[in-house]
Length: 447
Image 1 (cartoon, one colour):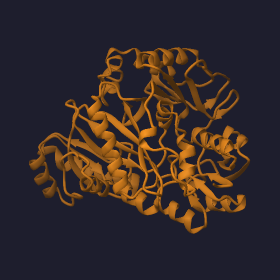
Image 2 (cartoon, rainbow, N blue to C red):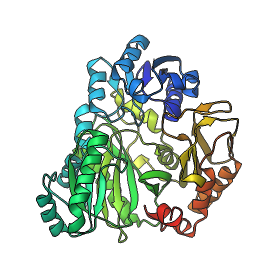
Image 3 (cartoon, rainbow, N blue to C red):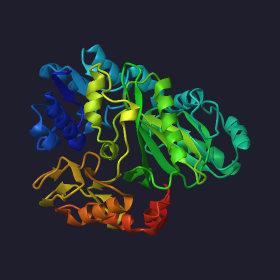
């Protein structure tokens, strides 16, 4: 096992990793920007090094600065967390070539799965269902028209690189296809430096269901069941839960088995999430693989009792997973609400600033993963999430009741947060029935 690791990230995920390290007897090294000098992850790490100014491009994305901090800290390995450099295959390779283990998959597996078109081909090769679409990238408008005729309108144009909804457009008919193609290419080039796009048949009003998988370097691949992430705004997840409501048991097993096949076929090691959309007839289709730990990993931890960060460290150190698929049981129901420094009354406008007062909810089955505290100033330079409120109870109804109670207890003065909006969602009949889809928030709350 490692003696010391560096966490190439910030905020709650850095703190989460630091805590797992401390419980395992591993020393931790934090990095921080000038804007994050007072962050809790800096205070609780065994060592901390400033890697640059507030802007991510000059700090958390500066590979040379991260490696320099690792060298000064004399660490064994680097954990990338999520976001920033977490799915950067070049950073992965630089870490390894500099003598530091990268706590994640190999650079080759990361690169293959990071390209959505290549990942789609791998899914087909491993008998994982995909939405009907183009065989490879679309190079010309004429080729797009031919594919669209074969699969039928509406069609979804998707960037092969990146995520977060960027480089995606829907074309309802042939008349709108060329314009949508150009818009998707331009956005993909600007966001990812890669204008490549491909076509899929558009699946309207799907559920977003993903499977947590972890694999070691000894051929063991297991899943920790699925999560439902259908409560979204502009392709950004707001509430996640596990297990997914109203998903037939045989379909749940089929999705989990498909995810394991995908990861095994990719010769992948460490934690990953395999994402699917599920249509109104419970048919499921592969979307992509996130080759890292996810924001919503706590809900999988709560229903299985498995610490995913510790499992990541164990696997990266070359050890076997300490459990098999038969050892993993799904118990109870977990829900996570992302608490963002945003004002839901004003189109979710970011609301950074100083937290004057903070009361964190507690009680049976409540967990709050966060790096903020009273007196902390939320900087305007990064993602607006300030914490994740997670509950775990024996049933979904009980989990919803506990989450609503916890949201009511939460007090944050000085900045606006999204807690009240989450409470509205949790009361909505469509959510309560488990019939919501990825368009639910936009349809019912944003008009």
